[in-house]
Length: 204
Image (cartoon, rainbow, N blue to C red; front, side, top):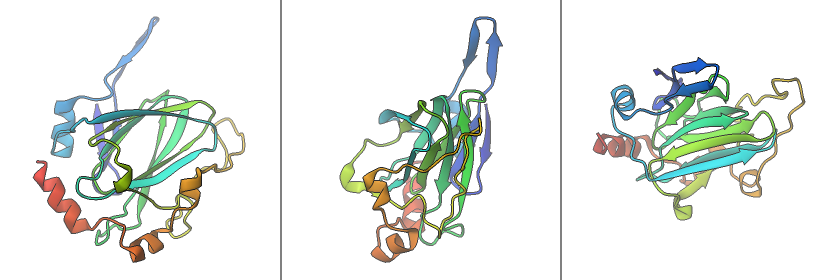
């Protein structure tokens, strides 16, 4: 598998090797040794999640308090999503920057985002199934969100699907009520870069 660090430090795109024959295909979507070599630390697996979304559904931008936050290793099992990683770490040189990766059931890439980063995706077709490996169990009291349509971040969400169907963002009530990045910073709910770096170092 091939690892490529994204424009947001602490996040990687992972492209697996696929082996296809008339029966179908096989691939490794996670390998601990390759992951640790690329990222510099192992992935502690505490929870695995799966979501299935209709076209246009946007989930995120979500992150968790540090420590321990929640690192995520994400892939799309069926359909297609545009996955976005957002730097919400106050004091980071790339604060507010984002990068995206197309995750689908053709190339079968994955995205890893380390502790302290924000995560979101838009489903590009009905029935898009996304699987997440998480470093920590879900803890609602530590979960935070920033509005995924915040113009101050301006993630370039698609307006049409790969087949040309128009896409309209569909948000949960929680995400629709989430603050902007600036409001979240002013409220003191964003992780501090120094705290993130200290915690990540403790994992190595």
